[in-house]
Image 1 (tube, rainbow, N blue to C red):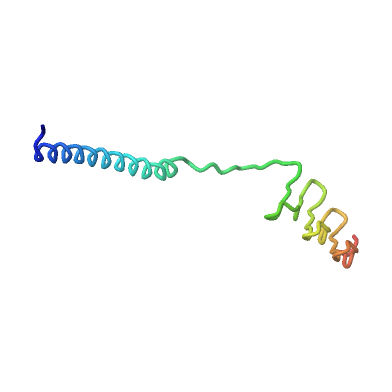
Image 2 (image 1 turned 180 degrees about the vertical axis):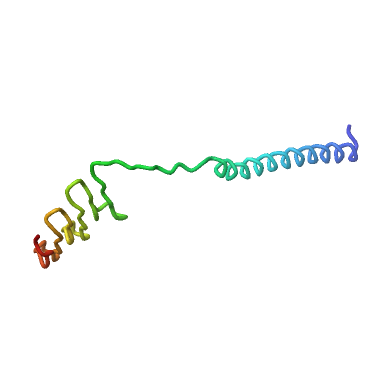
Length: 108
């Protein structure tokens, strides 16, 4: 039969071993977490010189189309998808909530 001292020593040794393992694991985890931002910092940001698209759409937080731009027009829409302002080759138009033109730029 093991004496109480031997049992306590064995448990203490196991506890110390578990403590070392925990310290190594936490240390490795902290090292990995510290390396992630550094990796991002060394990677060069890519800045595009040219962006090409046939159409650009801007949507709000609900996914509703609010602005669009294509080769012919730039339009701003309200929350009900009514075009409120529009710019294109023929001029500039402002519309009310029903889509009626309330102002247009002077014609050339």
